[in-house]
Length: 384
Image 1 (spheres, rainbow, N blue to C red):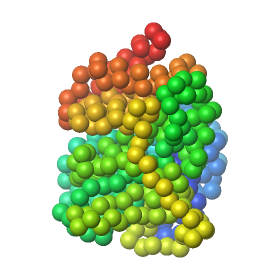
Image 2: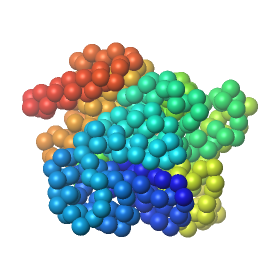
Image 3: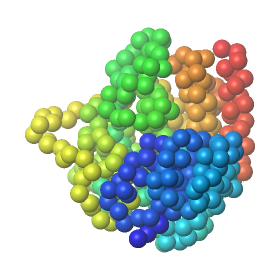
Image 4: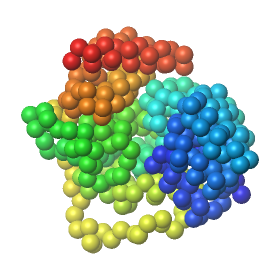
């Protein structure tokens, strides 16, 4: 029985992870962490009985302590508590990093320092600090198990050949709810419109990122570091059915693709139980019933998230941090009704023009860049 620590246990990835472990076994839930979802965390603590739980938000931690005064569990808070939670299982533990945002970077590095195995679903870790992660001594004896469906697919496809045989990565995208729409048609779309993803059930922020195609740009940035592949050798392809999760083209012209239903339980299970392949957590797919699979090139004019992200990636991790922080702030502002959908792009572009960012910043500088970008975003929004 191996210990598992789940950072971001109350979110979509976290709750599905606990459900899979409950069904498949093999792990003891050592610790749980979340931002501030007290109701779900209380339920999880009572059900799974971890030794430690962490609420990043201090007020939420205080409320949870009151609610759980009849339960034997250590309740931590803040970044210090999050990092302590990440390493509490020791080097034999698996740490699932599914907490959303840049607060996921430091606990991931802490888990690496402790020699833990890592299953990664936190985009910001690789987007903003990929150069720090890949240069860490941990990488000599470990590797990151990617949970994102696209990166999990690439990981599996790469096992079909040697690294020097790879010609390029084909990173697939559904196209989101606005695939095929012109810029004029996007002028008045609402948050409710953007949250209607055709294939995937995800959190609000990631769903908006899919609508803007920012999510795919972030995934290119991740893939560049996860698989040591130049950005120019990563091609984004629209695959509307979300059946092909990504593919790898080898130099002999062969293309290996991973095909599965659009359900996150499949890549979560693969990452957690690797190298074993367990019985599918969902009903298996019939290719005959599927009938057809379609491909398109991405729209780089109306949905500007991808070209903006590729531009940021060409300038290094500092500008990727600007891109990510500007987008996070802009999406939150859009969801609150203060800006329009297309103004998300305007904010990102203005931040990329205005914020100075070195190519490979230190950890402290990454957070300084984030702070400067968020401050600029607020200034831009106030003038719109």
